[in-house]
Length: 90
Image 1 (cartoon, rainbow, N blue to C red):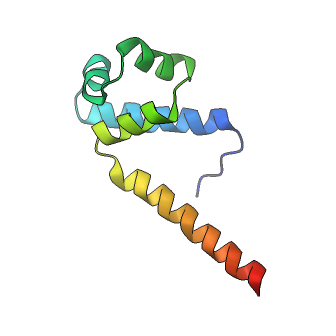
Image 2: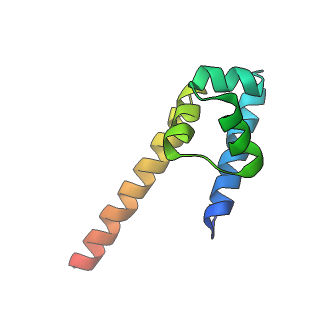
């Protein structure tokens, strides 16, 4: 499991994931921005300046059909929260 210690590391890993998938799907950055319904300069800010809103990151995940990654993250967090709650209650 990858341990990320700072927000910038998480953003960098997200950029890497999105850029790798974009290339696998043979999309240019401009095409992905259009598909995700975000302005191209906003996409470039995300990739090169590491700035993006959560909404735009989610739009990119949806445009690239990375639902499994997103759902996996959410499920893993919910499971951890449930286990922590059970442990604290016992």
